[in-house]
Image (cartoon, rainbow over all chains, first blue to last red; front, side, top):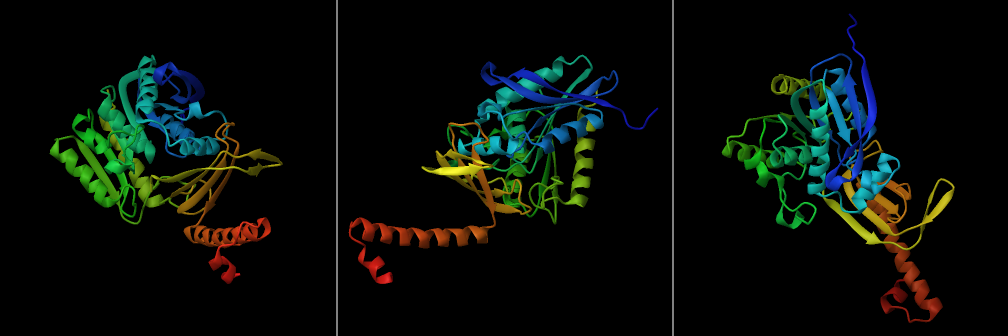
Length: 249
Length: 101
């Protein structure tokens, strides 16, 4: 038997928030399964190649994986340009992200070779979004927040699109959480991570946080100067161990 | 960093992408991690037309130092332009600018 298994990748159309059709990239490991599932929530740079590659990475590790394009409504184009257009529009609404991500979770749960467990994974704004989703919906079994900024938000930062600071939702977190953070990051800063951790403890939520010295934001981004290979490899091992534990049937 | 440092200003003018010029609707200034430049956190400038497709964009990522130099250069050029406008158009130059010239 070959050490490496194959996978099938394709784009699918989901019925996103408010019934709007959105595209999602899916990667399915070869074989009959049953496989656990991971829903990826992309970062502020958009439905980028990094996220498509990371979707395949999860499939390579034996997960059904899906990553919806949360920026589809901004139009077609290079993800870089689409993300810039979304930024110019003040970002996407948290509520819209919930609707789109819920569609991806439903897609996962309808897959015939799915084992019934779903993890939600995101970094940067996607980490923040993944955490919000795990607080607002009860249909995921594990959540990975990688350096999600603006979990702690000042009142002056709240607006119609982001009406509630995610830290205020901690009491509603419905599944175990893993957090990966760099101690040189400023958004989230180590102090903000402390605040979030205190809130998780206060409400007795199951979590594990890993904080790395010599690293800031975007530790896993191999194409950026932010990349920290040693911390990234350790961080990935923590994520896979966490999902392995909570998404096994 | 995942910052919320974003400033959006209306824009009138044009920008170039490839061989094509397009009219602008907005300039977006942000400070966040670079998307393309091999740098950490950067000032990004996006000159866009929100009414066109996402590709209607001239994007720039600058170090904070470069952005400060650009800001100072813009300041000097705008001051000189306003003086020029005042003299040429006969609107009456601001006295302090006249002395500076």
